[in-house]
Amino acid sequence: MSKLHEVFAQAKAENRSALIGYLPAGFPTVSGAIDAIRAMVENGVDIVEIGLPYSDPLMDGPTIQAAVDQALRQGVTTRDVLDTVEAVAQTGAPTLDRKSTRLNSSHLGISYAVFCL
Image (tube, rainbow, N blue to C red; front, side, top):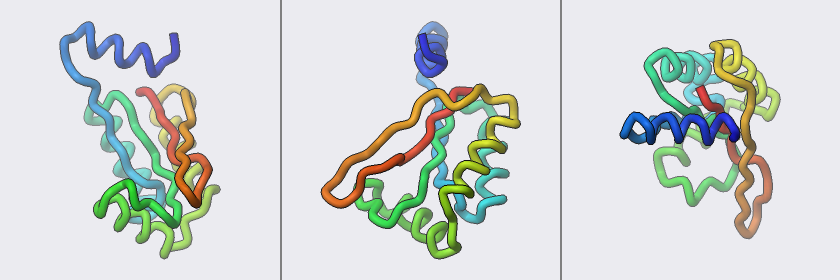
């Protein structure tokens, strides 16, 4: 059983939903995202999704679109995303459990990393 499955099984055993936090890497800044994700970890989220900013996030809705746009305008790179992932792992979060991919008419790539805490 993967760590992700273990987290959901634990939440189910406790008769509750898993709390999942999401933030695009680089929003509001790279260091600000790391601080915010650390705060999520410290305050009990079960799973963290770290978004990889990309130029066509239409299916994510206006709030995430605005955050991703800000991150991209600030020059966030894939290296920044990986640095964010590393910083989250240093909080004591287990290693990367799963990568997800998203496909639409113009984009195929890593859309986010899922971490189980």
